Image 1 (cartoon, rainbow, N blue to C red):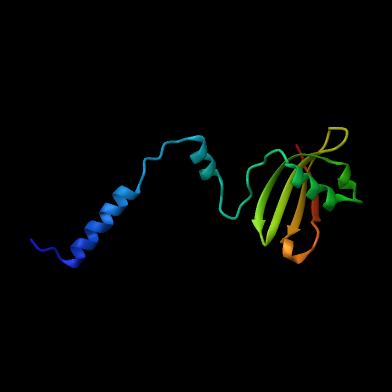
Image 2 (tube, helix red, strand yellow):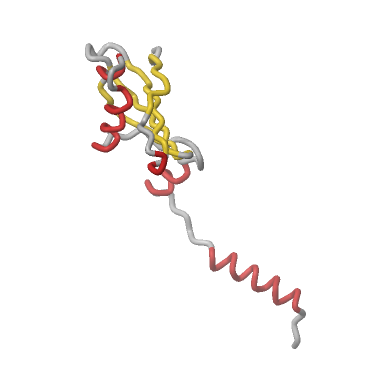
Length: 120
């Protein structure tokens, strides 16, 4: 029996879609992947030393340098946006501190974009 080119293509497409798919069990990894949005911010995590350095550089000489970063979310753009969730020294106020770090080839330092108090 001879199959038409269209029939072979249809069969191949179905076979690839069947064998190319895998069973998706809900795991921590798949939940994390589903929660991330392309172009969006990451989840808030404890800041790593490099991120704390970015915070220190960008807030140096401002009122924000007294804030204590508790967590940070990042967004990759033409550089990186950092959204630090910080507490005041007295521990009673919480702030979002937005910092932009340009791409390394620009030679520009990170810069403070905004400081917003979290209203509860």
